Image (cartoon, rainbow, N blue to C red; front, side):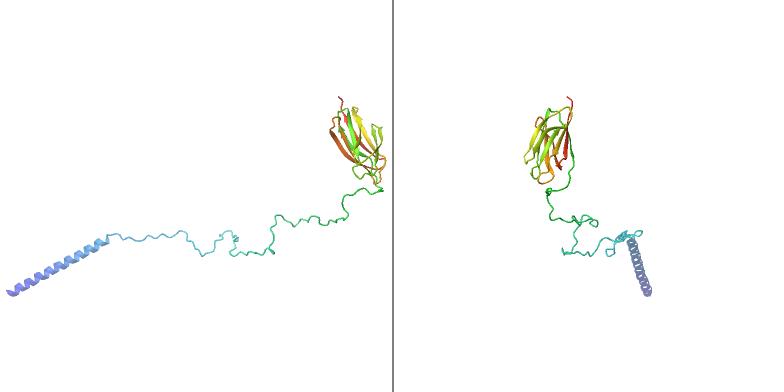
Amino acid sequence: MAGYLLSLLFNRTMFRKSISITCMCCLLSFIGTAQTDIPVQKELKIDAANKIDDTKQPDQGTSLKIPSVVDNNPEVNMDMNTRNPVKMIDDRNLVQAGYGMKIDPKAGPREPKEGSKQHFADMYLGDVKSNGKFVGIVCRDHEYVDGDRVKIYVNDKVLDPNILLTGSFKGINVDLEEGFNRIDFEALNVGSSPPNTAQVDVYDDQGVLIYSNKWLLSTGSKATLIITKEKE
């Protein structure tokens, strides 16, 4: 009887341990299953679409190869004596001013040489209009005063037969006719320094200068001026 009781007690003890172990296993299994349902956070990594390589040389393109215009190691010449100056124009076809020119050391204002045989023919001094009653005509030797003389004609009539040209103006008044009035200055000589030279000025009846010119004449040559007066 005692043996039976001990056997029964042992079986109950083992049964309890078995139940305890079974419950423990179920609990561990439940905990493991529950943990698998919890989401795990992971770091999100995004790769660049176009990775830039700082050490790589610039891409020159695939279809068109263009040489780089940037010099990583430019050479700078700091010597101002050997550097070429900046030129704003292309001087390949330029010629220096005065190239090939021969300078005459005697160049300068020249006066007619005494005894010159050069002939100065008749001159036409031009024409001028004036509706006044008369004009005043004055003349002087504008070059070297050497005794030049002239005769003055108005419409082929002698108005003054002999005027000595000096450094000061000398003149006459000429009454104007309607139409053309022809004034001729005939060189009577060439003085001591040819040719016969003079400046002639014309003033209207109000004293206003309306004409000025110069002549160079040989003996016997004439300088002709036309003064036109319109009909009133």
